Length: 109
Image (cartoon, rainbow, N blue to C red; front, side):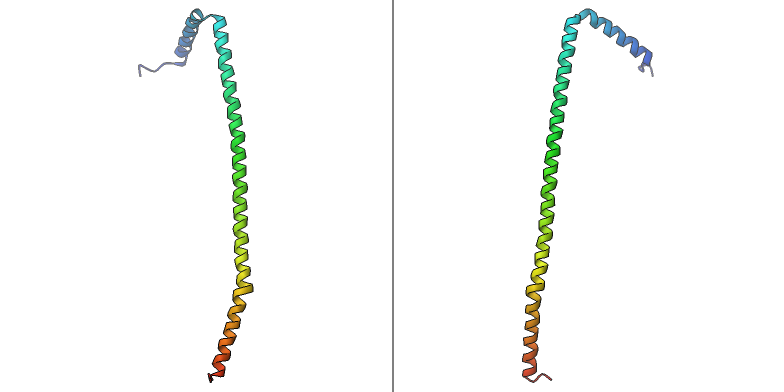
């Protein structure tokens, strides 16, 4: 593995690059660029935090809507059950009573 570089060699190369850059870029320019980079990173961090807050709000709103839909579905099932018990079943019992009465009256021993 001739292409593998040791950690010490990497550190030496970085030191050489840093030394070369120090001669190419003036300290004022370096500090200015560093401040610009830090400012941009700060902007990105603020944007990311704002996005997180918005997402959390959106998720909360979505959860609330889902809870409302589940509650409405449960109430709807409850209404159907109530309608069945209070409306359909008594009507079926009354119809059955009429049919039995007709059957008995027409000689169904």
